Image (cartoon, rainbow over all chains, first blue to last red; front, top):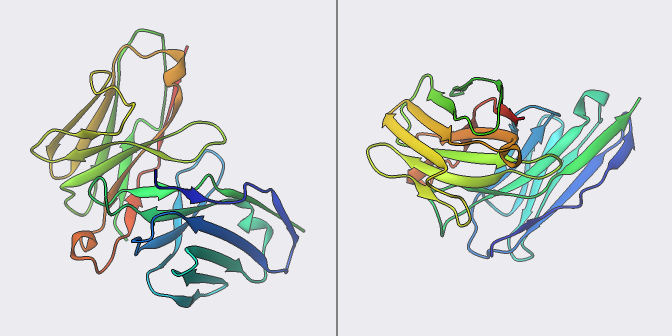
Length: 113
Length: 120
């Protein structure tokens, strides 16, 4: 069974610090990876997508992908209290339905003022 | 980006009744839509894939006769929870792939705001 693993947290960082979120996946053929942010009671919101090995930066967010290690990470620089949410790692499923996402359980991030 | 809407945003019903949830793509056509379910403190789990003009594909363990899916047009998919029971109480979220998804160039999905179902 294809799996996406994340530490559930909570991860607590002080305001202004770097938050580091990690994710591993089991399907070696995976090619598309996503980080979603989900506030309590709300739907997931796309933060970053990454398809190639290496780093991808967008504002305060940097996604890192290492396909050989089957590892994806998300760095949040200058963390703000508004970044407090659950971060979901998702991987596109190539073998099953037409492109659904397989989600990890999420890491709860708390940014303390 | 593309917008996906869901209606209702929340619903409370009595055990044994049926509830219909609508998912609409507002500014693009979606031949495929995905229905996910999220229980408290759990992640999103795919329930079924809705395909316009054909039968839905259900994930293992999801009862197709209980969760009826209809994808009648390129912008609307509906999920009907029949004879709902308290254990069906959950957050139901639909999503649609971006236009570029099947070309492999871009695999992003657009999520609806979700429907909170509470069955008493």
